[in-house]
Image (cartoon, rainbow, N blue to C red; front, side):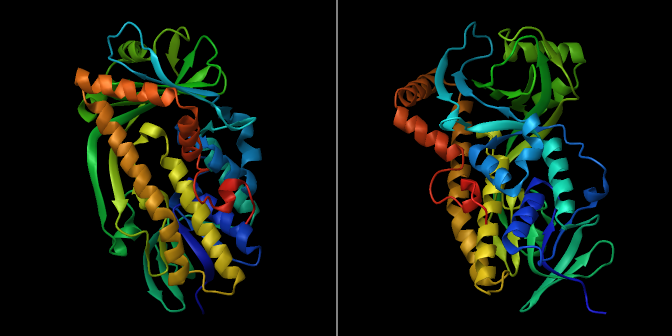
Length: 407
């Protein structure tokens, strides 16, 4: 029997893999065959308790793919952003930089959406659109001139014109392709949790730059916030080992009293932080997407949005090639994707790395220079607008999906 043949297989069924499958379905039509291979596909629902800041460009992508209408009820718009630079014991935390929350009139620059809500909505939509969800992983592959022969962990051996590695920062497919990485650990961990509070947040996000690392309050629906609390890795482990009442006291010192009494609503978890960049984003019939290609510091909340920019660029390159009758896994198609994404990714990685190092310096002189710089940006509306649009994924040569246009 001939092996089952797919136009594209996504290895990894997270947000990047599912959104790429949906984008390719839209671009190549119902006659194409796609599969998402991930052992987690057999789970009835996502267990990810985190929430993500979905920038305006990524929201437009979700709108174009029909995802946003399924998650909009759980999406909280970020209507304003405030940045402070202070020490933990400071009695007051003056705001040095603030951003209005719109990239266009009536369009917030970001929304906070629970990851599980997104994951479950995209899984359901993928099934409805005829995308095969394979509850297994891609264990190996052998590229050839006519396609890639895949080896799945369940023993199946399908073939595909294109293989997308959406399998995370420790990508096995990246390693199998012999693609090296450049990176380092920050020796920091992000403590993530959901917090309830007495008073409404008004859609305002706040990022306190503290000596140990940034502490972000990100608005969720209702009187709730998602917390991303950066500490040195050993300190984060000690904090999570505290009894809940003592952890709440530590949290309150950083959270402040503006929103009233607070309550930890879920089980806090810590995620190690580091910088990692693949030395190439492509190989023979293989494209790295999302964390498989790059991981950056969450200081600007850009991790998931960078991955969705990858999705938009790759889907457009593949769709344009298919309409010209070209091989969608051919070197010209993949090279176009790599050129489109590499500079933007390196620039964002360098920016977040530099910000983390700059705000991690504890010298009072450095802090003065930082605060003067923030104050200058605060007084330059054109520069603030540029930063907002770039962070929203709307700067430069944006792919069609990030502009809200169908493929």
